[in-house]
Length: 236
Ligand SMILES: [Zn+2]
Image 1 (tube, protein in one colour):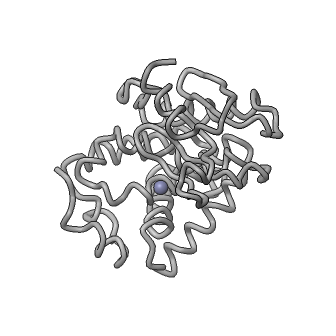
Image 2 (image 1 turned 180 degrees about the vertical axis):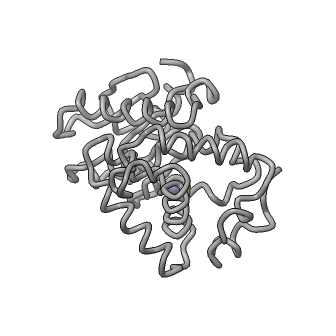
Image 3 (image 1 turned 45 degrees about the vertical axis):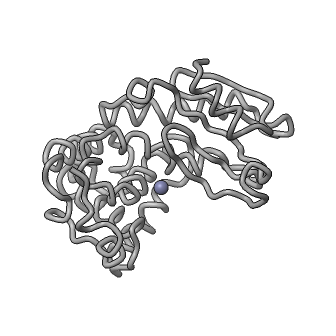
């Protein structure tokens, strides 16, 4: 474990006494964690392996540390439960998720996409699209760890259809539609496309190579909420 990983563990997750390491993940958890932690950390690494393949990126290398996934005690958060979240380079899992059987995989199906988006060429010009990008890849990532990715994409597609004002689901649904249109036809159904890592990879590479210098709003109409929060603030 390197210095940065150790510091993250000690400062953010001081109530976690147990630890398991994999090539891209440091998983820290309390003794009362009730599931088989070896199985859980294996699934978290599977998410990283999948995303490394899809994006061609390696956040462990870019951030010079692995992603620390930890259960965050309310005492570390001013007495409140935290929200699931990511910043370079850790993932917060709320303490009360200890009781949830699908966690921390479900929260990580969104949060572990964040380091990849941050390392991607899309980030420089399209920071505001990160939540949509993460929720788009959440469908196939859920499937990788045995959760219901098809139902997730269905929810995203409905949000794209009704134009719901969201910086998460609306762009995620637009990405899913566009990915399917461009690279998913050979799969047949959009559900089957979820399993097509090469098709999804082709779409992600298409975004990376075409929108490094161009705003994604030339491809997809941003939702009003995204527009208010992010447009005009694109980083370059
Ligand atoms: Zn997010």
